[in-house]
Image (cartoon, rainbow, N blue to C red):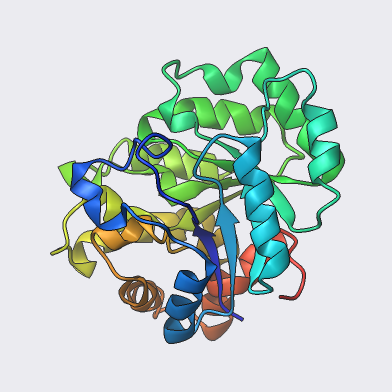
Length: 278
């Protein structure tokens, strides 16, 4: 089974999706389950995990409703107010829906790079364990030192790093990202998504040769048993179609064994997010 561990849905409005700038005009429209279903049928993907794109409980509930209505949506990575004293109550309400599998906060946009180490945020992460939820870490490469400290404080919590921690590939820089990512990968409770790289490169004329050094670092650091395929659709559409990214990932992991490729393309997502059958 092939599982896309990272994609988004939205009903577009400029006010709610201000991060979609003029250079991303191609995705200034609605993206809903019917749109994604067409893409995954062509690409041979069996199931998906929907990830929050707005920091609101309204969106989290909407994603869970979509998942309940569409069996191919195997899980939801939602947003909850982790820094709220009442976060456990909110989690208890949402966790009654089995397709809530993880939580994410947009750490990359926090002005304070130490935000993830605040006491109230730490309390929110601790609250996830009572509901057996994974936490998705959305950061830039410059946040890796703080991310290492974060995961060290919660050795029993499952973490997934989104988009390979967004290396500075546009600038052609691989260090210190590679060194810090390898350090992070020494923690066995942390996995990493093979996603978002072409968006960071930001050019439609990208080549697999440009991506390979970064992907090889991830594969070597985490190993095939802790790397998850993700499309980052529809954000990827700015520079790459869904099927092209699927084919690119398959080429980048072609040297691995069939068992290792199957792990990256689906089994790791099933385990890390504890997904049921779609």
